[in-house]
Length: 275
Image (cartoon, rainbow, N blue to C red; front, side, top):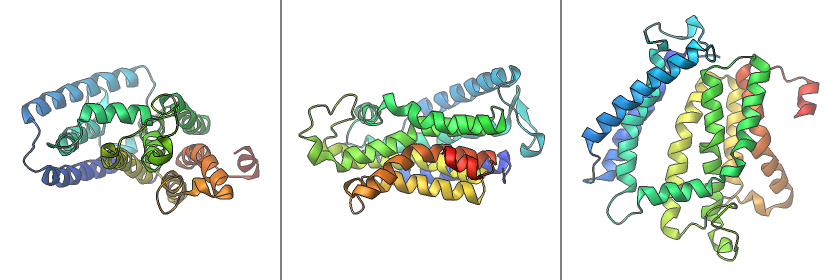
């Protein structure tokens, strides 16, 4: 890894602050209840301290001393708390933006997002990433956990959510929509779904890019482009025979390539053939 955990955490918090300010301005007068936000923040921090301390105590996590600043709460390095703090900073503004009068309810948006993300397919992208990293490094660390979480939910939300937005007209005639094959997204959910896909993916992409080097950056760029290009208007690779197959396979191979790149694997002929 080319950056310390402290530097990555600081960058992640900076992005959260910027997003919180931007989203608060767009949300206008409809603001979050900050008392509830503070209470949720304290709960997240306490749970992070307990959970991470237990995981570290059982030997499931390891942190190289050179990559952390030193201070700990329990056994958890102080950097671990950047993520709950980022949630406390950015999520209330995002919630306020999505629940403005006249907009869709956050509860319904999250329900639609859950269906759109195809939960039965989550493992198809999370497992290749986790397996690639674990088989290369032989250890479970924070980067493995963060990357696996990303390829478990946000990645699938972007991949399938974008598809359900831009395939709406054809989905109207698909009786299987609304269940295992994704959501039939009414037009009022289209823009919020795209916003949710962006804001749930960008923080993870920043962390993974900061933790990797040029090879990881290229892999992440290709992976993200394939997710967008498959369905988005103006690209629609899914409608082009050769590009359709290439892009679709990239969706499920690229998580493994990202995992290998982040783990510092050597891409020799044997590994490339296996992929």
